[in-house]
Length: 330
Image (cartoon, rainbow, N blue to C red):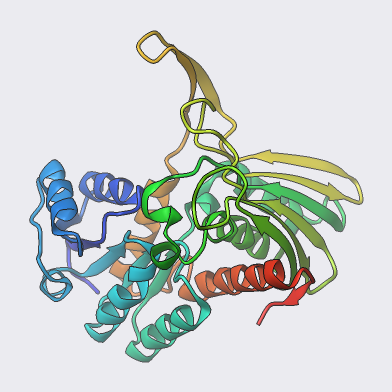
């Protein structure tokens, strides 16, 4: 694609990252956000009005105006929106998880491969400078072999559709397994082949899991533990959550705290302390990288296959929760 201005359409605004996409799209040079669609017309119109964008009543009408689509809907709408984009030959960046089940994720990957256009998965944590330094350190071999990893992606319960099993496809395990899964695959260059998981609903009155603990076994035998729980109480805990790793290697231990840099904000109006992060904007880096791939016709920086692999791990985790035994990733 050689067009001077890349036109972005946003499909679905249910996920909070839709705001990041709109802000980044409006701030980048050579980029224009041309409009918004959401199956909830009121929500979509309010979002469009907030950012001074047109609202499109149908996804087809939006696709006819854009060079690339960004999907930030509820998880269950990722598949139908993406399939229409593939049919229209529109490169698409999809919010994580790629889909709410493996069958839909595989269908999306196949549709875009058949169309010959890029499908990307939104895993912005790859753009953390700390994550990239950890990857460089692991790849250069200075720490020796990695023996095990203890990881967390704990957060507050987001509320709303995240607690709806139909719209979300699951709970905390669905929401917070995928980022660490992607980091593990990217940093160590290995596939996760087996998952043992326990999960339950213990903290909130919702019909989906809100706590979990996973043991991920890689194809070289390395083990990663992951806590993906919605265990940080909203309105009390000073930040939304975390992405951390404690990496034990032959030559030492490395600790990663992706959102660690922050200042303590004491607000009289709210009578509470809040952690305000600083540093680079992961979403902006991810979107800039994606736009460059669309502009040049290069491969998706983080592909649909990357998203599929994460969904396959989530699927194995939920099968393990039901069986109470390790399950193979299929």
